Amino acid sequence: MSVLQTLGNSKDTEIDTLRHKLLELGAKVGEFTLQWIPGHSNIERNKKADNFAKLSSEIEQEERTIVYQEAKTMVKMAAEERGKKNHEDFNKK
Image (spheres, rainbow, N blue to C red):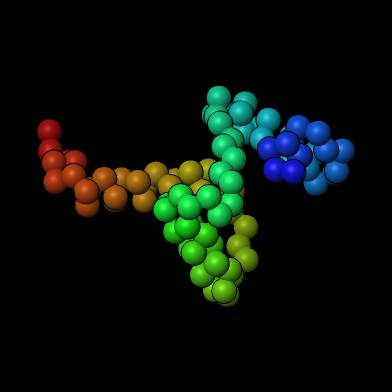
């Protein structure tokens, strides 16, 4: 059974918690889509994502609590930096 099917049917408390978090996210950001990608489906980017996930699982993880606003600011700053690097006229008016 896929995670998406489980989200729709399960009485498990962890799944119920996830379902509520997804509803909260939807209330904040509006409509979004969860897409199921079958494992081992020979999708090149899926293979890369699997490899990155495997590599990252082997790295020691630092535990750090972060609030939503701080995470939002960090993502925005990273996106702006990426935009500056990828687009020469990013700051030109």
